[in-house]
Image: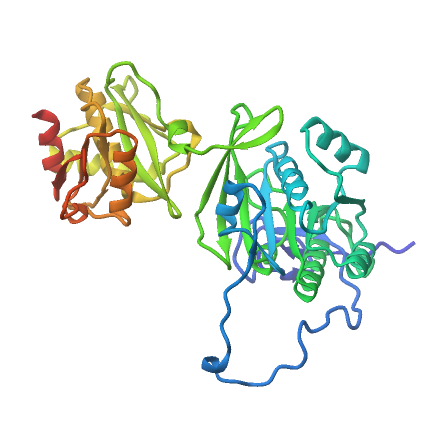
Length: 451
């Protein structure tokens, strides 16, 4: 029997090669070629979403606000941009056991009280889903469940019943009979996601797809999967901790980088109304190396504690370790601290941690990182109830950050009384109950600590 012909497909760009290579010749990505079976060409696999369109002026197109359906979970609605959109397709990924299926089962049970909702599972049987709903104490009386992985059968059910909300758990388990490759392959994931998206747009169905992730934490399958859908959400969190974060990386109907915070309990995921409390340690007295900053996650300001530990190094190469922050930026900030403030850490081990497991990517926390390092190095605590934010440049200047007024108001609301911020972010009328020191150089911030 002749051996089946195979090819190697790039998971990033979708290009095909006859043999395996370490680097994709098309997009230059490394280690992205995976073995697959060539697709069998078929006709009329895709139909147009609308009748043949006519050329028209953009100004003549009537713009309408997108109506949204609340899920009943405020934190989830925040990340979605206000709720579910009819015809919108959401892709949510996360590590195994992080709580994706739990959250979506809670969502579908709440939405089913007012809208026709389907839960289609390719990983669990209907009995397993029913057991989970019973364990979580959910009212699943109006939820329709289908345990199926065949795309054609799923499409027939959706065409026949036309629900308002559909959960597909997960897209990697669904396969199409039009292709010969196995479920989860690049071709199958691309085909099934495209067909399901087309059905959702045609029938106006709100659809949520669950996606597996690789060991690096990115969504498994071809990169085109993230381009097809309208929103991409990531479920983050340590399985050893009860807290879970949902972050939006793409949203055609709302803001990106929005953050939803949940706590995992015996009855499922519970919303956290004051997430700033998660990221602050409760010290009886001020301790060296601790500095509170305000980071902006989408439209939400969050108070996060930055902790630093500076200790004498006993090795030729001092350690530089960051948890929740960018390590390369720490090396740059230490050079700025030495050059412009005269604090040398070339013989010190420096460890930085963002409390609570939050990941911070914005440079607005630069000043807080440097002040926490100086506090630990001098073994001198910062002022009690002090808030710090600002970006630090290579020339030693302290640059303004976006939404400075909102950050200050959030700090004042939580009882903070002192603030060190960039001069450009200083409010003209001040903030009641908050003493503000506005600076434009790093040296000025260090002098405030010495004073």
